[in-house]
Image 1 (cartoon, rainbow, N blue to C red):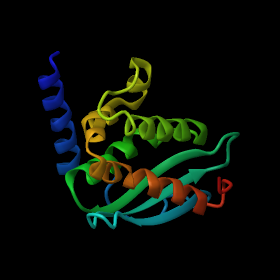
Image 2: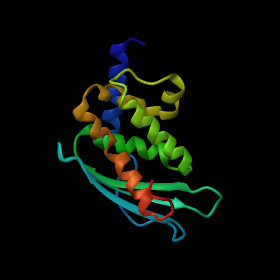
Image 3: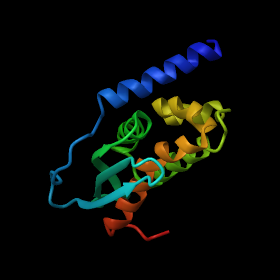
Image 4: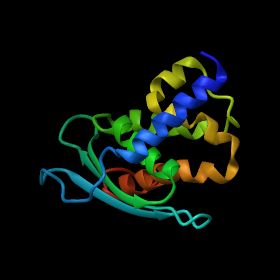
Length: 162
């Protein structure tokens, strides 16, 4: 696939997630045994904001993200990024979530060159943000939801502040 058509495909993924966001809508956790954390983050540069709630299930051996709910406003990049984050982390344990977050942050440092195939396979739709990494002012937009997730996970009380 040519670079131009890949960029068009990536733009379409971002637009689709911005138009039909996954996990949007705040509310209470479905189960009382879940640890819920909430974080509100604002990007002061552009005014984008997101409030994110995460439900963590610690009843098994490893803590698992059972749900992510969020609401926010801002550019299509910030809103789509939280939608993609929702799809990536729900159902995964904390180690995997941390790894995905680290891989996405690494993608944002590539200046648009992308990562290796294995890393991009792990990120799935999140690779659509590769081009965003060319624009330093937009990187914060893409990372806003991830910052909220990190903070919300700490606020569940189920993990140490690292």
